[in-house]
Image 1 (tube, rainbow, N blue to C red):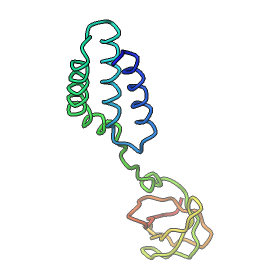
Image 2: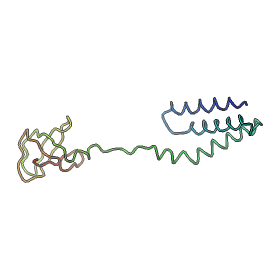
Image 3: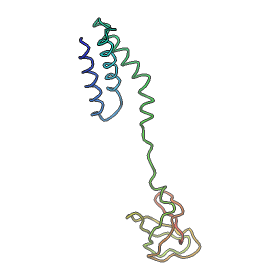
Image 4: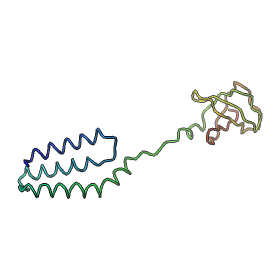
Length: 142
């Protein structure tokens, strides 16, 4: 196989990896093909069976060694947007005596709300979110 076939194959496999939904499999085969193409182009590998053997060894070894760490590095941890609401202001949709539950609006969404303060809160009043427990906002007066 001529060296530029290997380079072309490597680019096609790397491009196919970008189009695939994920998993990082084709990338390592593409890199192995690029390495074999470069070695063949420089005249370091001239026998076809050795090119295929080197391609197989490089692809499988790099897949086994680097795929796991690469997947872990790119894995996104879910962000809990709800936790960032502490300290924001919610508008009450119900009257809330101390320790009682009602509804409030925050970020365009209606939330279950509990009055965490000692003072009663009136409908339409702005209240400070002091804690988020699941889908329940714990609020007190500003």
